[in-house]
Length: 295
Image (cartoon, rainbow, N blue to C red):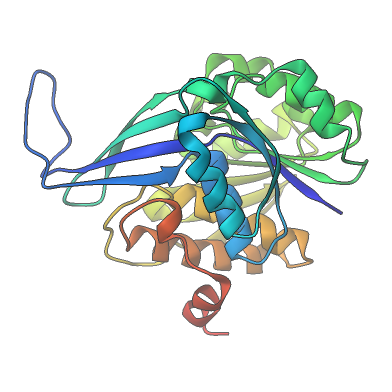
């Protein structure tokens, strides 16, 4: 079994602020960092740091070649990462004193995914291999449908949420990992249990992993539900918390772990991530997570 992450690569411009900027306000930043990022990049790094072999497909500009080098340093195979003569995607990230953030995304090369590229990449993978998809690149529906046609096992993190996702064949997704805001957009429900009930009808054969921030997470399959409390920690920067959770949860499941074990590992990994500044650089390695869990 091989795992291909078809996702975004960004340059993150991170500004530390006393509070998130309000309409019409100009305030001074107390610190600035330029980091590697993007949901695809972060989730690939989380998987790799957890011990998973990862193939990465996506697009960068010539200004983002250092991002390819970073992925390679983490042991991620970048043979399917295309380089275009346009700017790399980037994010402007505000982080306040409590670790909360606000993000502006510019798609750049992330929006240059073509049907020919998708077919060429997926030609290298077989039925039963796993594909992880987010929604920071164009062509998500095209990638998902092509993965279905080829019999790949599909893991979808529908973030950032857009109206088009309502038309995607979500019922063909094996693992749907999303937060409560994305779940509310998809189901129209505000209560977590009612969200999960709605997913029973929307995609009855899918495993749903619903992350709830400080309220923890729930994994549902049919009527069965497993709950996990959040791990208390002092938040410094929450930028890559969800991506860390996704990577650690998925790595555990793909390597034969139970849902309970996957939720515990993912929760501890995310807690370590938010206690540090930065995105990919803040993601812990498996030894740190296992120590935190107590194994």
